[in-house]
Length: 218
Ligand SMILES: [Zn+2]
Image (cartoon, rainbow, N blue to C red):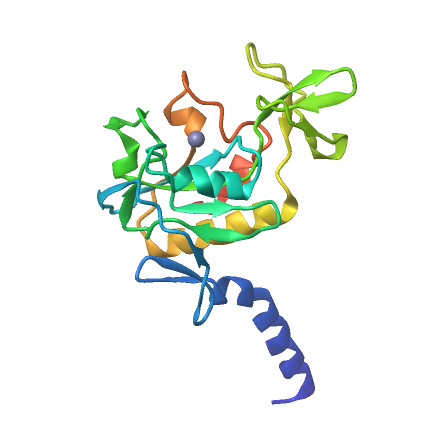
């Protein structure tokens, strides 16, 4: 192989590698060959799942550890398949072929109780914020700095203008995982919790780049 061809080959490997090494084996996510992501099993689950949908959520909690605690607490009766931290950390709580309890009462195109059809992904994010002079507070009264605030410019009646921003690494990790899920399962749609349970839910909210995720299915 001459030098030019070799350089092209190296660049090609660099381009495709992030998505080649992340993969699913026996419904468990691996970030590299032989390296499963962190697994914190949740007792909150149903029976077997054949995934057709991916549903996105935010945790609206203090941080990733608080979210793991809640999603693995039998008393909470909630769970998800994958939790993505603000540093891009990936924590799997259930195999992708097991029903998780993330969507609750929900509908989409004639389907109801979407837990039976969907993979649930939670992103560590505080959700909507209220502005109090120069301070931005979550529903838990935790304060977030201006650089973590997403200002939604489009006025939507009844919807807050300020939201906790997702981090770039968190979104790029979520995109990589979603791409792997689409390759592995017969995924028909990527949905927000707010779309399938509109009266009850506001996640993942306007700070989440849903259009970019849906392009993965195009
Ligand atoms: Zn949700």
